[in-house]
Image 1 (spheres, protein in one colour):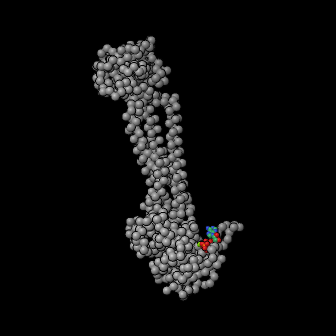
Image 2 (cartoon, chains in turn red, cyan; image 1 turned 135 degrees about the vertical axis):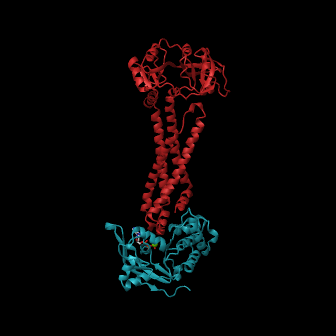
Image 3 (cartoon, helix red, strand yellow; image 1 turned 180 degrees about the vertical axis):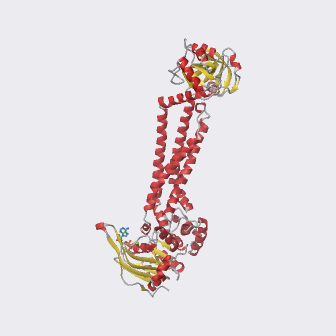
Length: 379
Length: 251
Ligand SMILES: Nc1ncnc2c1ncn2[C@@H]1O[C@H](COP(=O)(O)OP(=O)(O)OP(=O)(O)O)[C@@H](O)[C@H]1O
Ligand SMILES: [Mg+2]
């Protein structure tokens, strides 16, 4: 009977395609939107992830997110270094900078300044050049995506002269860094060099990066630092969550993405539910004939369930394929790098698709159960 | 097993009934509830033996379709008892009634009722698939039956590609393919022109009628009356004359 069920399903091409379309649109929207959202959340903690050496981040208690930084006095560094359990503490500078491209355009960028001695905070993955090259005067490193933004379509090369906030900078290295929430272009340089590119007055130090001694926990040391200095000291994972929470609470992103997902599910439900119901209603007489010929209700329900499941499975596959294609293509652009499709989301969307299918099938099944086989004698 | 024991205790009349294809005793059927309730069949007593074609005739609305629906187990009588192939239909559970129908009864309808998604041979194969055979095995057997009905060249045609007469031949194949002991036809020729109607009845007589089988034909198509071996007349839900051998069946 299952073959007959499938022949009946495929025969009604318009509705079959409609069912597939309904499911696949839902699946595509869910996966695409959730993937983009998770990608954004990941970007919120990108800077933190790029410096795995630093277990603790110290900052001004007023800090909200990476773009509104309250800088600290340089003297705080010494106080943090004096806290028991601190193995090392280095300054870290972050600011926005304007760069004039070789073509005369202005581009906004993020400028990171790292400890002159240790160079802790430079991404460790170098495409060209090395950390040592940054010790030269006016030396900067650029993130890989930023390079493409400023010199689009050009081969990677070093030695170019740039204008950073109207100051001269020489490109000495290209690094791979995580995509940031706002800026595509990131420059890395020594702390002292970064200060010379910007003029932030007395308070200049954005963060203090700390590593705790072995045998102590980051959490405890962070508490010690906070107590001793009155600054905010967070472990790197706490800091990441703070940034993610900021996106959740203070941007419209979760609401707008949630709305799209909800609409996707709703539209999927309506299309699939109505179409499948229509399919069953149009085939009701044939189900009645099968009933008269001796098909049990259980068999008929199995047929209906199979028809719904096959349409759902095909739609799910296509939707997921389209979502994967989106991420595959979109992430080729630097603007979208870092977006991905977690398997957990794919799985969860499969559960939603199954729910859509199950409810639609149950709705339509009532009719199949109720149809009187006696109607087969009527015209 | 148990049912046969009980039947034996019923004595000679039970044994007689078992030799019959269909036996109805005091069967009536109501439709509607409350003030709209109407009795469509009134205390029908009826025996149909194996062999030949029994015609059920009468004016429109007299209850012919209702009666064969009861015999097929598609409806349940309001009062009375129906035995088919010696089985008391009311004693069967809903599931075993469906199974009983699948094994023992073939249907031919006025509107053919072929499934449009299936081609001719797949349509004819449906009862075998319902009985649990694979579609491919069922199709092989159905092709043989269709061939005997002169439809060998149309096996893969879809219903909409076939004429009414051809569709009804596919329906005949479907009613025969599982070799049921009872075939119920409700107005099998009403949707056909005279020539196709007569051709269909000729095929029915040749292929369906057998001493092992009872064929019940509901009709008011006078053109085909000559194919009746017996005729039962129904009038306002009552049998008009006791079932009589027609005698002058076509030769
Ligand atoms: N499901 C039903 N509900 C209510 N009334 C019904 C139902 N089925 C049949 N009837 C009534 O029972 C009566 C007999 O109907 P039936 O279909 O058995 O007649 P028939 O002899 O087959 O007529 P025809 O020759 O026109 O097919 C009719 O008056 C009809 O309206
Ligand atoms: Mg009728």
